[in-house]
Image (cartoon, rainbow, N blue to C red; front, side):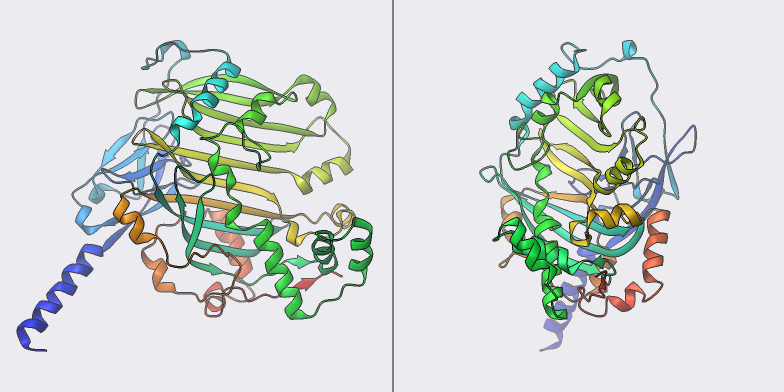
Length: 463
């Protein structure tokens, strides 16, 4: 290669690397008056679809392209005045001023405010299909999945991924770009997993008898665990993301239609919030008086719905123990099976796109006999948390980002590449989560574990 061409080649590489270079911003969003952290505040780069979200302690991380240092970073949260700030002015904390008012004082661009929560929800259900994006798009993001036993981490998975959605397909496709896992320290009941597998093709009693004599070898057990996890805990199961577009979803346990028709719950208009001039109905989901008096389970949650066009911005729902029920065995069973989820959307070009999803439930792969769980108070739980950080809707860019081979397997072996994570936006851990991770690292550090295939497993069989 002659000298002029070589110099041109170096300059081209330099320009290319500079264009792709980013700076990392770490800060904390707090209430200006009280100093308290503001969880789940929205952080976005102006004139782009890129952004992040603060965690439960107000902390966030965001990568900003060097070419975008003349832009602004927008920070907003319901009940607070939004601000725009230059990246160079972002310090250790960002203060938001609370907006306080009575419902009668709210000035919003709505034709007429409604006060019947069921009618508001019904209008939301009618409007839902109109908020489905009308062209193919990619929603890039980050996922953290934790498996816990008695509030202690026993497995941790983090993944960089994206969802691909089209107007004509009901379900989104998921593609995993990179992932990093810890060792698997769950307590696995091989006989119970064997029973579930046999039950798929055999009658209950026969499957139960055959499972009693099931004693798999190590490789067979590892394959059985992966198969069980992929079936029950895979990223392919994030069907809840369709909620804002379909009032009734047949393959989902809970939808807007279920909430509307639930005879054991009641809806209550709690307040009207304001977000940049747009009014937001906050509707609480509460148990009925009859349910609160008699049932060990109760449903609680809330909906955030636009007063302008009934767009669904947020849904939080959970089943938990009834504080008025004193039966200890019932309480123990509820602790075992209780679940909840939070789902948030952001508006872009008049459509709604998922921005955050969190699900807590029972880890069936870590399950043993229910009696053992109740007697020993061992509750295997799983938490999946998704942060979506960038929308790609340009037709050319979408096609360029689609993989030749799709990968939605969360539990298959893959190598850890630390350099990939050096400039990828993630949802920051809280202090409690960091402590749980360090407890998991106490035996073998995650860094050391990541040098191996991510699905290395240390199984603690309980039978």
